[in-house]
Length: 345
Image 1 (cartoon, rainbow, N blue to C red):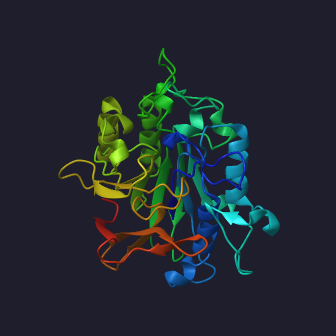
Image 2 (tube, helix red, strand yellow):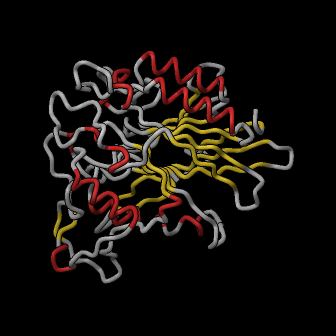
């Protein structure tokens, strides 16, 4: 499962009040709803109770990259908050009577070994948003997120399918820039990180699939109106795009999982290239909005007896309910995407 652009603020009981859209924090309604929905995943997809589900966070855990925001994010992901019902008479913009069944313990309690995260551009701001936000904060890793690049092999329960997931910080390429600012929120990958992945691939080339987890993506396509100006400046910048395309060819990377632009997208990274960018919604930022929905993705990967691999992408989007938000699966087949790959090719 993939969530992205959580944008946690400095307290769990936040309603995203911020006049600068890019600095909006998470919404507590969405944080509560996400927990409820993720608990239903095994039953929705007919999985056994012992099945291990991995949760990927494709960057922007925080709104401004402050230490207390990271504390809220990690508490939510790995533990839970207990909220006072009397202090929660208002969820969102309206005062409501909360039914007894409404959970007031936002927090996923996800097993640490099944949680995989990378930083986004907001996580490098070090509490300094504005016209010229910092481009790279070396203290983010390993203090708040795992040091990247990293590799994690995921193996199916029957050991019939293996996937090597590579996590990368798409902001680390800014480390040597003279002017430490990322005004247009673009991404740069450090060449050393790409070299490391190629060396790792040479040592572990037996996986059926390879996947890259990056906050910034390759595709310039942006549907939402807020990104009509210079959408290409918000993706990986030119040299990094070329380098990533080369990496995908050399290491036979099948899928790049991204976030950052707050909208869902699935498309080849270049014409005729059997590598796809799969971009996730923003999951928790801002007011619940069906016109520009928050959501998350569920990836279902299987291999048949002919060694053909099927990768299904199931989008879940926000559905506004009477007193809180809820996530429901989009209507397949219109929104579900199916990708096909031969094994280890």
